[in-house]
Image (cartoon, rainbow, N blue to C red; front, side):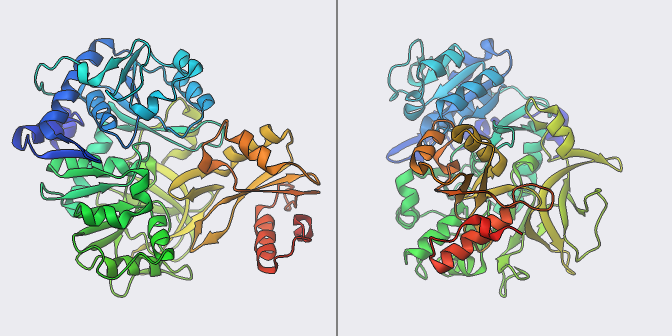
Length: 532
């Protein structure tokens, strides 16, 4: 990280420098709308002038995504020396209210879709200062981004390495998402390691397939801004037909979860030679099946293909594996290995007592680096549990299981707890179960990830003890407190739920019943038939 950590560094600093060198080069493209680097820097500087005198907690919420306003808000918050906090547009009002109260935001930036969520309850919990995009519906007392006074581009002030750059929320087992706090120093360390292999330049056209609430957006955004590359934001419709987007924009750098590849293959859209413009393809967030990644490589014959691994808690990415011929496959799982760690990371595989396991044996993946996040916002006990001092070093216990092969390559072997990835979204099954129990009015309820295809969860199934019930009504009610992707796609009612030796609901038995039921197509079987 070098001088960045010694002298202070604002995460908007690279954007400021790029605006000096290539001011007219396109920075962000959303549909037919474009912001040049100079335009983005001017709007960020103007926004910062409004924010700076009102900063108390130094936290600015971003209720916006896939819009110019989202990137103006992030850049403006950083420019002002604040921490940007993306808020998911898919969250129900109840969750937004709870998190806004917990965060005590100084300001909120909203785009057209974010403004639609500002009902009475959300507005009461929101900060007094709301800054809306020019195309948003009227919000009482809000300022418009386009109406902020333009006094030119002022340099963002350097911030200390320990200053929080952003807070990224992931699913939490306590009922509210966990806010991962990432410092400027951690982000600087990440960019230092990642720019070595990403190699963005002003010639790159980078596809952004992620909401700003997903930390993979951090990779694309900050690497692009410091290199002067153009960030092309994909709409929801573009995500349904990514081949048209990549070809029409001559995208050179792609990053997504593997689900998109699976979708294209299933629809017969992933043709050989389809993406000649791609030079770099990166996949993350889920196990990467070998057949899928090889099909993508044939579709992008001029592209290097990388599989990357990293929890949000380690600042985006800490390990990577390039696709080779033959591929470095994880034994018995037919997925690409997660590879070797960054130079600034130490990786260990621990047993239940945080003792290293011998090479070749499965253990919990633990990570140690200056790149680690600070922990969880407002959750000191959880932070202390997952971030441990072991033999004088600070380690993050990921909950992922892994194994190191004889060549020093690491392989992902599943989860040690009940956290899953569903289409790129990290979900704690306990969190879904809490809302299921509350909605169904019973403690006898469980949720399993099913089916599992190539090591990745494809959906959620809820089980409730009781002979019958209205599953559709239950799902509809759960959508009042959970985003759609966390609501089980199927609800099964059973007389009782199977238990394991510890008296806990046996999720494996429930998943086995689903497998059997699916194979037989036999509606007369029931979950209690698989009680061990």
